[in-house]
Amino acid sequence: MNRSVLLAALFVSLIVNVFVAGAFVGSRSKPERSDRPSTVQDPERRDRNPVTAAIRTLSPEAQTAWRAQTPAFLEANGPAMRETRRVSQAAIQGLSADPFDAAIAAADLERARNLEHKNRLAMDRRLVAFAATLSAEDRASLARALARPRNVRAPPQAAAPAMD
Image 1 (spheres, rainbow, N blue to C red):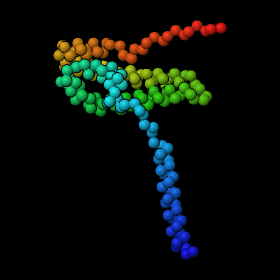
Image 2: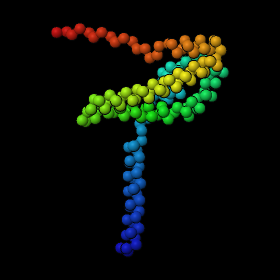
Image 3: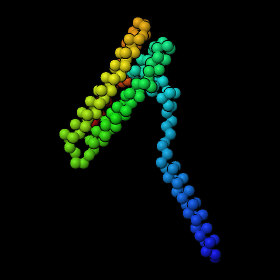
Image 4: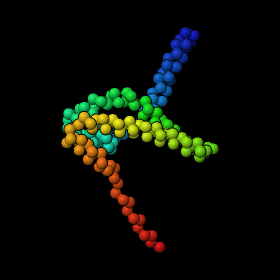
């Protein structure tokens, strides 16, 4: 066989192998599709957030005003919110560290909660400023919706007595 034909065949074989390996890796690394509808399609999931559920009780004009303020709020507070999520996840993951240092774990969790508190204060301030722009009727509706308990679960059923 001619040397150039052999090199061409080797090159083609290499390309096919890389393509097949890439397809295999790509199919294995693709996230699993959930059968659950997206948050947009499932109002029950969307309304798990008490603020979102409360805003949905307002007049259409008030809802539009809230949504109009959202990009500016996220621009100002989004990085802190992402940092809070990152620190919280790292703190929780730190619980599995070996060797485990309880003082470090407690400090990490405290830092995560402090960041979470700052983010909640920012949202509270946003809600108060927004409520100041609402009619008395919308303000009352917002207050009722925010006061409503969320994700209330049924109490666990008592275990059946053991049969000896």
